[in-house]
Length: 109
Figure 1 (tube, rainbow, N blue to C red):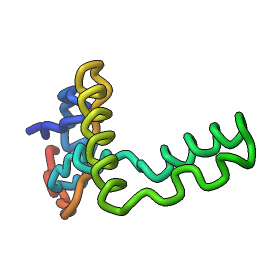
Figure 2 (tube, helix red, strand yellow):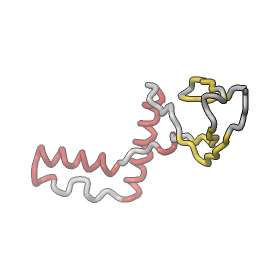
Figure 3 (cartoon, rainbow, N blue to C red):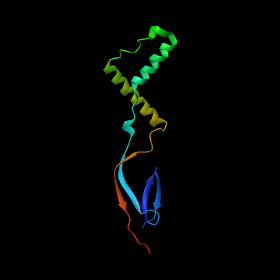
Figure 4 (cartoon, helix red, strand yellow):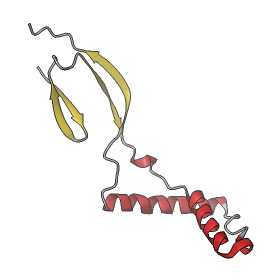
């Protein structure tokens, strides 16, 4: 008897002598968790401009409307996700939820 374990897209087998318990859970992909904080991006831009020209840019990008900020969030997130997919930077790992412990009670003697 052996148990099949999937680890980072590699199959590994364990016999009961090696493992007396194991956990089973549900895989939750994290791709939808990847977002871009456009507020941070705008802050970086404003800071760079302020460093370059000084006080004249003190209020630069301080009054972006909420709707415009949300549109920028969506667009930047879309671009970053496409870039990650194109160059294979999408996460190859996942989060496991709803785990349940199973104990193996096998006497092979």
